[in-house]
Image 1 (cartoon, rainbow, N blue to C red):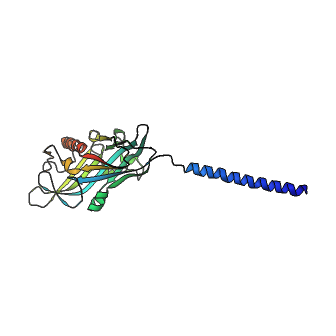
Image 2: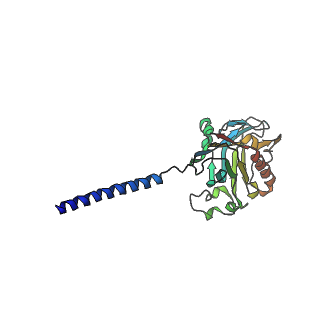
Image 3: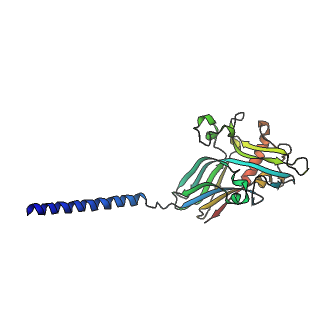
Length: 261
């Protein structure tokens, strides 16, 4: 009889052990999936022309009246971070964004290019910080310094003669002879440390759907001064540094942030 009682006791202990183990594992799993309180966030990039989503291979009016067609727009964005009063979260250290596919039609252009989408570690988003271009440290490297697949590993995005990456590319065609046909190639390539521009947008009021908008018409003209595209339709030489400065200063004024709660 004692043997039977001992067996029953051992059985009960086994059941209790299994129940305890199950509860312990459940608590552990739940803690691993516990919501850390961070908000979901989306950061997008749009290219506009006079406030409207821009489309490649479409005729636009250059600020001085010439026919202008965009074929490519690409940009390096670095040190993008979401910030609150207490925390900062870098979401992209460096990112190469080729907008050309996004700008193929009005629908995809209006949707924009997604730079970041996911859960942040912040309970609220008060600021967005980023650079158009690369930091001096990043720009001091060369493509060979980086593994394949790294945004900085692309030789076609590096100026060997300038010892700089190309931070921004605006390519297309312009009508310089006034016949209504855009036949002269445009290649406005911006690079070098002094061209990098830093941006900080604050007072976001908890907005988590953030869209960086670059209005190309404002890059090409600011305060009545129109970029002289006839004299410098292509930028490939250090002797054109003044053109680089003009366009990069215009770019600084051509970017706004659209937010949605």
